[in-house]
Length: 280
Image: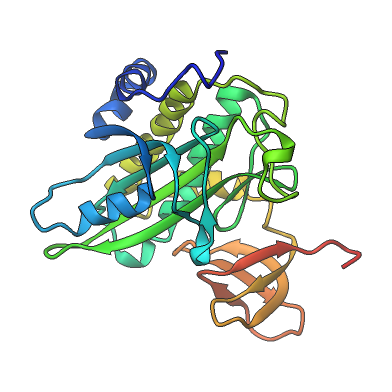
């Protein structure tokens, strides 16, 4: 592996590595662009998606540095140059029912986790809805946002950031981790980006062709999701709290929880999830 500080992101290198890994995935992504700095790659692609004159679809944007990135619930996420793999993609899944769009961040998580396992050997798992974990520590986060086009169906921008070259002292919170901390320093981010785009392109293509009802990726997600079967605490967007057992993922990608207080199962489409240990 190379020193990530010397291996700057390059659209040409990513495209070449992607074509070598999968010609089908390389054909899926129409554009791949890299910028030195931006406020937010998600915001940039959302702007493209809403532009009536733009035909952007299956577009990829990467940045060396992000200065105004956002996580869920508008939490800030800022990176120093070269320390992370920051990427957003834009797709217009016009043949998929909007009720199933919640699967896009989930299949992105499957793709990121698979690429990390195959490229770095790190045992990456998934926490519903948007975290990639190593053990109980967060290695990557995912954020999906919907942009309605002036004409036609909605576009979906999904972005993610993988902590690559961050020492433990540089991590934003004690519950975070990085590839360097996990014993994999010097990851070539171009190669990792290509691996993620391969996995994501193939899954998105299959999922769209199946009208959002494709079951293979759903099974992959269930296999990788460590939230299922656990006692969880969910802070809902309304600020209400739900505690219960995470039982399954429904057809829309929602987490189905059985409340500890009894009553009907509850489908959660969004919320902050904590895995509750027995001592809690």
